[in-house]
Amino acid sequence: MRRTHSHTVHASVQNFVAFPMRWFGFGFNAFGQIYVHEKPMQGECSDAAAEVKVSSPTELSSEVDRRDCCVKNECQKRASWSRRASLHLNSDSCVSLAGFASHESCDARPVQESRGCKDVLISESFLSLAFSDRVECWDLRKEEKTPSWSMEIKTHPDSSGPSVKLPLVPGGYVAPKLPLYRLLSPHLQAKMLALSSEHAVLLSASGAVHTWGLGSHGQLGHGGLASEEEPRIVEALWGMPMSHVATGGWHSVCISDGGDLYVWGWNESGQLGLPSRGLRKALRQQSSQQEGAQYQDASTSPAEEQHEEVFISIQAFPALLDVTPPCEIRTVSCGCRHTAAVTTKGDLYTWGWGDYGQLGQQNLLSSDEPQRVEFFREQQMHVTDVVCGAWNTFAAVAEEEVACS
Image 1 (tube, rainbow, N blue to C red):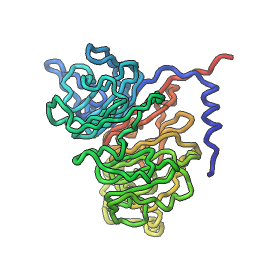
Image 2 (tube, rainbow, N blue to C red):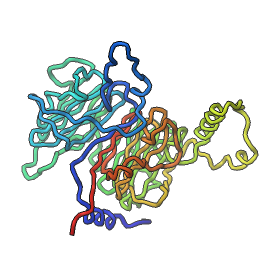
Image 3 (tube, one colour):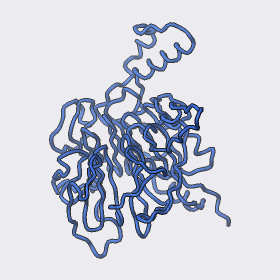
Image 4 (cartoon, rainbow, N blue to C red):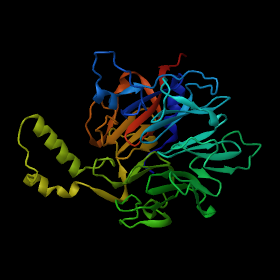
């Protein structure tokens, strides 16, 4: 291991006092996942582009108490392409939804069936709810009075936390599409599971990483582009225990016990944080168009041809990603073609596709290099968590001040 992980964490806890968590969102907002569009007054024109593309971190409006669900700021977020789910962690926990099919005037509406929920997972078609004694999957495309699928869970009296961590459930996992329940071998000792629409990354209790599913863009990390029907260990990471895994549309990432970040899969939009020829080419074309110069698609300078091998379109083996300045990664999340990571010092870094502002850099540019989101540092905010939707990003922050002696 290249770095010592624990000392930095303890130092940050001792030096600062954290205030209540606040959530910010940026990126794709066509369905009001970040904030609800205000209807323009008669005679006024709405800025449709600004409503759909939110390039600057925007605080999610605080949710109010409802008769059927008491909500608080202390919550966790989950996101799909068109929706955001908020799990409110209090004595009477529940889930609220924002985005597509949310007809309430508030930015989120409570889900009445979620009272007492301990964990939540959302896809474009299904909402999965984990309770202390059961798991339920509800079809978001239908008005149902009963869940599409459910499973009873044996409770442990001495356990205060949730008995399952979605999408993992006893004996298997909940998939984002039918069939909803899929079996997993108990020999895998699954601790965490990250799912994309076509591939899966599993973290075992020992820290080993297994992948399966579609492999056409190297997203399985086995060195080739073949698909795998069953979980297969990623041999390149053998002997290096991992603590966290995440998946994007066609890329995968994991964090080692020492806080290092490993990436593999498709890099066409720079989502791996590695040099992307396609992205650099698109940026040059965009710059030339802005300057009024004619861009020739086939033209490449001799220097670029000579160093063409440094550009990576597909990374079929896990690669160590160096973030500048050097730092330790606490958690990471992936969108369809972008990635966001939080450091142990509370900084947020983003990279990849940025056409909807999902990188939070207050522009619509993409990047193949991890860049710190300066907004939070400028506001003296400590980022504690990040969750990516397909085309947007949600970050949890706590304002901090130096503790008095």
